[in-house]
Length: 116
Length: 111
Image (tube, rainbow over all chains, first blue to last red; front, side, top):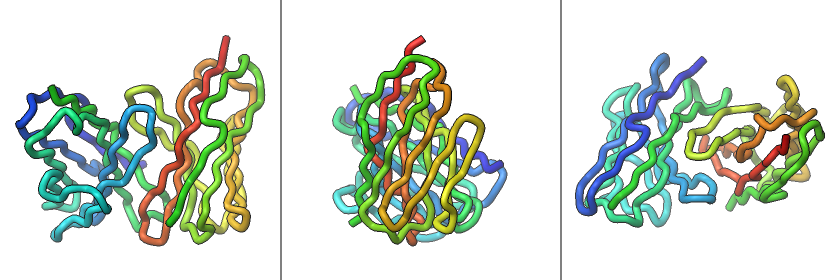
């Protein structure tokens, strides 16, 4: 089945630094990937749609200059949290689909970001 | 705007009970609906995917039903076990292939 790998699984960084999270589709190509954020005891909220070869589409209220998304190949999307602050501490998770989503999307294992 | 609600928010049951988790959505124009399990601090494990043309899906002790017209889905867990303890999330997929997640049900099965 489709496998999505996300790295790192956990990261602790200092306030003001940047952190990059990778999302890879291991056995299929994905023209579209999605990035979600989950705060403690809350559900997942869509942040942005990552499109291969073009700019990402951000949901309302998500700062595109803070959360940089790059989808340079059909198997890799990256999310960079720039100038991280403690309020950016969250669980970030990506998803991808082999096709148009008719068989559902596969989710990565997530990244726990802690900004100190 | 699509909104997805799950009831109950939390549930604690003794081992062996059959239980039903509920998911409701406001816009019936969905592409499909998917149930996930999430363990604390972990990612999502897909349980069942129901396409909009389907009424239900079954996998082992799990059965999920979908009633698009009423905007409801249920996840039935038979003979619950302590290992079933987790948060269960339903998500609807719109025509733009975006997932809208429900608020989740935190399940605890007591041994």
